[in-house]
Every structure is written in structure tokens, then in C-alpha cells.
Image 1 (tube, rainbow, N blue to C red):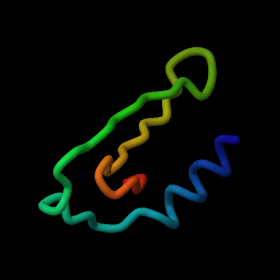
Image 2 (image 1 turned 90 degrees about the horizontal axis):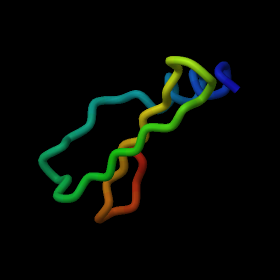
Image 3 (image 1 turned 60 degrees about the horizontal axis):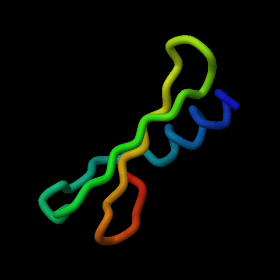
Image 4 (image 1 turned 45 degrees about the vertical axis):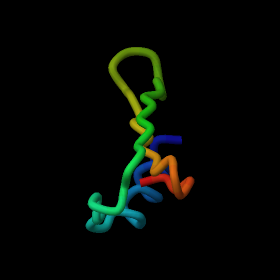
Length: 50
């Protein structure tokens, strides 16, 4: 699963204009036991994952 997450994240990485974001949701998920986490940042008004 780690390879998939890294591949998708590298494709979606781009500069983000945060001036248009008025409500943000942040969630951190444990991908594996130990210290491996995935952080999900969402524009709550538009429903987009950033």
C-alpha cells in the first residue's frame, strides 16, 4: 500500500493557493504499526482533498 500512496501523492503534488480555503479539515491515519502516518488535508467547503 505504501507504494500506491507515494505514487498518487507524487502525481497530485502541486502548489496550492490557500487564500481561497476558508475551512480546513485535517486527519491523521496510522498506515502501519509504529510511526507510519498518512495525513489527509481537506478543503471542507469545496470537498477537495488537498
